[in-house]
Image (cartoon, rainbow, N blue to C red; front, side, top):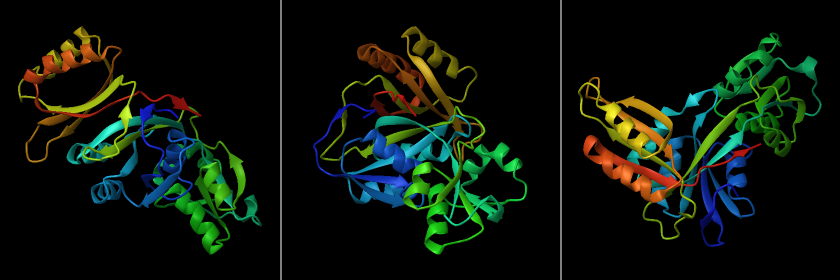
Length: 289
């Protein structure tokens, strides 16, 4: 398990974006290794938070950034607006394969289906196979599921090896992603009013959001204070505030080794920021291959 926390040994309801075999599915089972999971498969990230609102015992697993595709900016906003708390993170190595029906071969494949980001991550492979028509779809694993369910000949899916296996597809080639250092970071979010709360035991990372006064150099003192308290800034992302021209919200992640020093740093930057909100304090995830 990549996160260390206290939680009773009951079945956990995990809301993910995508279907069985998706990378969210893989990340959930790796993070909660050895636990019995009930997956709630959602078409959108908004549905993940709706599931948490409708049932406070639901835990959300959602991608927040990829080392190649960058940040999923909208998910930052969903976290800020929701009454959830980040309780963990998981870093998953993303490796794609191309798969088709068992009776098909390379010569039969006329069309390849997958999520736009997966297609982008396999650009070099696709350029080497110009005869295959590339068609975007909603999800990597869903592409595999539809080929199997409807027995679609002439089509192949770019998906995880696991998605190919559970959908009884033949893998034509593995590791087709262009960059092998392809990782996605997932966040684990839970309702702040959940009775059966996940309690991180080794908190050394925090995510927060704040706004700043609209004046020259307002960010620099905040960063200087974090540096003074030896906070390691691992992410900073600015998003425009709708309806307030040229004003921004800043989403930052920091890691720390001393929790009390971290709290002192928060107290020091609070007077310099507006609407400071801690999105979660949790244990930094390790890379999982």
